[in-house]
Image (cartoon, rainbow, N blue to C red; front, top):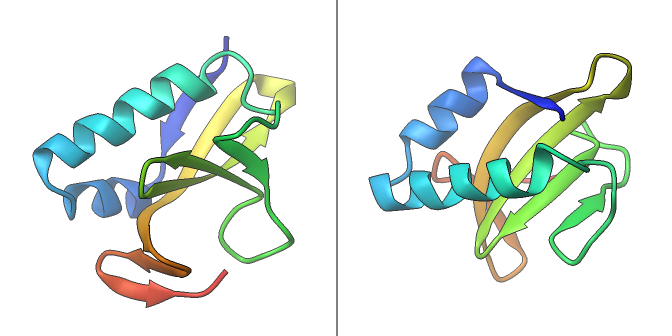
Length: 97
């Protein structure tokens, strides 16, 4: 089982969401990333090289960006945002990946 670690940035990203949205994102993280975070599914995919993270978890309109350290079984959540159409927003600011 993988341990989940949130960066200070990710904690701030979560704090910017409404309470019910925070719960939805945290539930998705726990359900999807504790056991097989490296397996690609409909809600998890490896991203093209970028400055944020190597992987993306989709939870409805929300996106969780994370990196995996398989040697120590650690998933590090780097950022949390949401998408509207093809636009990504993190802390209500548009971001490019």
